[in-house]
Image (cartoon, rainbow, N blue to C red; front, top):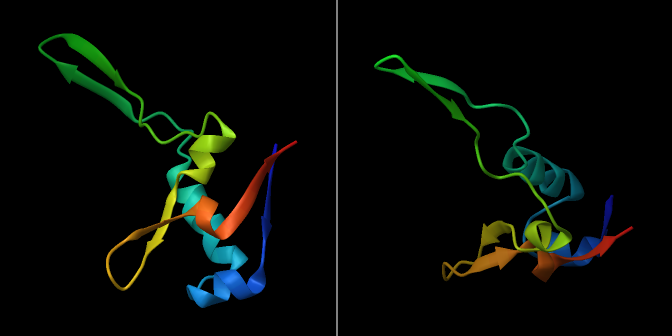
Length: 83
């Protein structure tokens, strides 16, 4: 389990809310199988990447971009604290 400690003012400065952060992280943290590809009698299982394995993976997620095009990482917006 990981806790995200945030300041509403800091998120607001980027036009974000806690709900936006949740939705962005959920979209990135893919846990389902990507399916199977059958080619010439051989099967290839597809596992999509994106699963968070460490708190640092979560902290290093790009959440938005500045007006200048610089990425804003989750670590720039919140404190990521492992339990």
